[in-house]
Image (tube, rainbow, N blue to C red; front, side, top):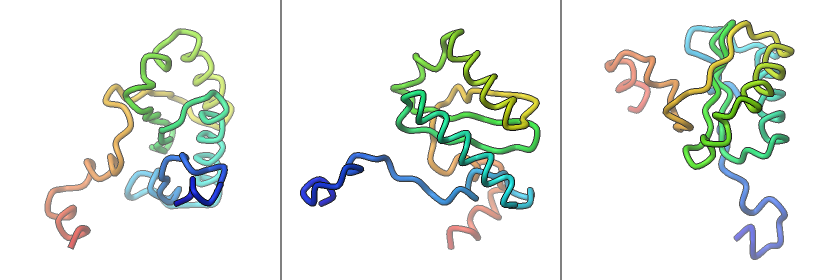
Length: 119
């Protein structure tokens, strides 16, 4: 429908609320949300289309769609990621080898809590 309506973002991937990028138990603050947003803006500027920046305190976990991972694995891109995310305040920068997975933060929840959240 968006394409038929002539919207320029018709092929933009779905994106959940930024707070879903922050690990469970960590306070969702305006600062943390801004860091996630700036990180995702930087990945978009690098040409990646489907990704998430997962905030784990001092650690950032970058998830990139499997079809884009080969490009992300280059030494050049590792340098870009390091520069971007160190400037955003992260001490450790990781690239998730499983790639982008919607809802991946839920894997940190105990099974019984995950069942309650889905109910």
